[in-house]
Length: 353
Length: 287
Image (cartoon, rainbow over all chains, first blue to last red):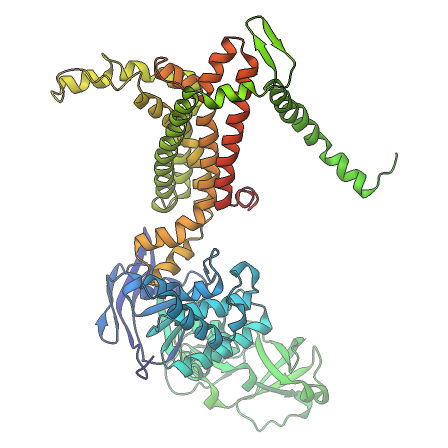
């Protein structure tokens, strides 16, 4: 923790086979030192395997991995400059919280007084100072997670690996904890690699989102870039919040035979953020706007701050528009009402299929 | 239907167990304690209250010798079954990754139990005897010139048979405790820098301690109460406390045997209490 920004991870052409299953397929990725990286994808996409290979709990079948320029391949987990936080927290059930946190120090042969003092500092850092003498079974999920965090950080790792750290928590606590994890990462200046299947969690915490599917990286980049410019159909669907507009015969397809000239390029699909897809009742709209696409409202769903308005457009998948709730109340939009779409051509983002 | 108070229902629910324990445990023990104070002669036994049986027992050098040997057997068998039980359980739990194989191999451990104790015990005799398989094999291989005499009808064969018959009682509780250890916990320990031996010492052993305790209770009580195996396998050349009792019963010296039994029960209770100081057996059974 002394030097600022250590923990650069380079993953070079890594493969992982489990018997016949090719779980990770030739993945290459560079995670900058001191960044918060989220590996995002559905279960079985290879993100956890990748994390466990960085930790040393799995061996890569092929490829190489470096941390701060040194290959970690073949090193056992205990010799790697990484620490892992498990999804189940994996606290030692027979040890008090203090001894759980002090465990790695004990393994190094540090005397009891010194290691307990250091463990106490770590407990204070995660605001669990009063719980040192409790057993893990006596703690709530969120408290256990703090202990697990303290236990991982006491080893002064260059890289902290978090395997679905928030999945066992309820929604409110999850939002609170992801914020704390982010703050902790910024305070320590080490690299965090966080595996999750929740897109909101990934974009809220990270400097870098790595979307994975079927053992390969689909897209990697800063969260705003990945969210605003999904490079593929897969990422757009997984990130959510996007309408997908296909191109057929060189024209954007909006359903019901309505088409428009696509922006330059030869992409097969374009994405359009749902909140940038605006609608207005047909009766109130002027015809001047181009392209002029019409549709009717199939469903309306209240989501709190906004309404999710689903537009029926026949052949391609429905379009969705999100309307701020106050605007919705005054707009006169109802199910079955004909509407006109409004969007900026610049907001259309080309994607590979 | 008559209505009962909650208290009454609790009593009713515990009644069957209370009755069983009273009839089959407390009553016989009470009779033994009572008889241990009676007087006896060649002709029979007479209700009395004398300490003579205990005096005879506790001042006899035979008693000391029998207890020494019984405790030696118990300790040896405990040590060996513990090492085997822990190793086998460790192998089954952490080295076999497939659940199907793990259960299959565990069942293999129980195969010897498909035959009776007596057969399993007797089966050793042709194997260990002077002209048995081991001696013949070793002589044929030129390892020894004369048959090894210590193999059968010796303390060696007694301990061997105990280990063979009782190891499963150690394997089952340890395997049970080990299979409850979450593999993430082992990985977390490795992640925290623990070597293989440190994981064993700091994680697996403490989390298996309750199983070890339960197995130890089984082994100690089984060995301390045996007189049959020791008689057959030592060729009546060795004896335990229970052999002494069997001998007294054979001589119709019931009050002496009863005093012997009371002392043995006391000794076993002390040993089990010591084991229980280290482990929480209730946790093993309920978790």
